[in-house]
Length: 128
Image 1 (cartoon, rainbow, N blue to C red):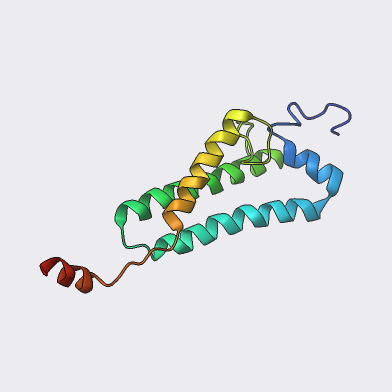
Image 2: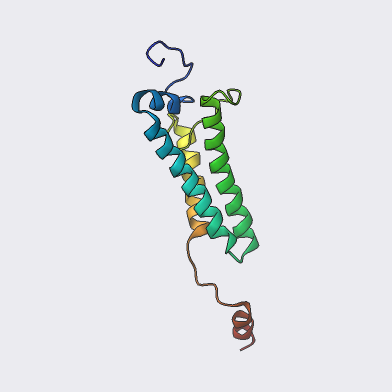
């Protein structure tokens, strides 16, 4: 189908359809697994975060990353109407790549492990 120009924007919005045609189900499952792993692991790390801002901002970024991938995959499978949304880090597009890189970099900063002593330890340290 990609050789017959059936897909309107095969190199951008429908890159997963071209990849599925060229490389098969295994590649598509690997791509889905990678997006799912990043989203679920980020949510798991953010559940244990004590700072409300970090938890909310990180959850929003993880949801943005996962939903963007889900919408693009749904459009490629013709389950959703075409929106022109790119697949993060896979589709062609400079501004999309920059935005995905910045948002994933912020998500990594939010989910890095930091020493978060007990609240009673922090209060005692402040009184000294």
